[in-house]
Image (cartoon, rainbow, N blue to C red):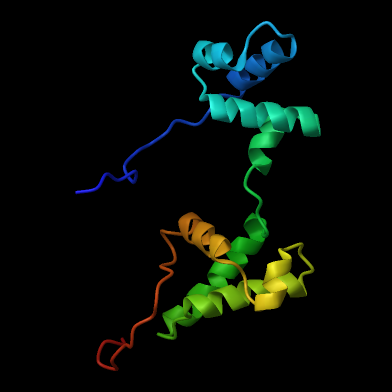
Length: 154
């Protein structure tokens, strides 16, 4: 049976440790290898945070918020989730393609910055759908809808 990373939990990184490690790297007191061992931070994460701190010149807390580029903010995503749940209560389920088209239309109407690829396909990307599904996994089940018999409708 193949290994699975589903049950693997990683602790969130401590921003104070990362800031101290970046400060020591800038002062050239430690190398990436030494800082990652001393502060127990993965070397790749430390390199990523260090490069962002050099390029952008912002704090680690700001960097961690901006690592995942989100199209919609929390309020807009909640509105979209409620819009998807309303027809589902009436046994009219949206397909995955319809959800992606709906996300594209919401972004276009609200003049939200999105990928140029969305314009050519006239729908949102698979990545947005996957992350949206993860954030609302308790409320919404994004999958192919199945036919519902009249006897099952209450």
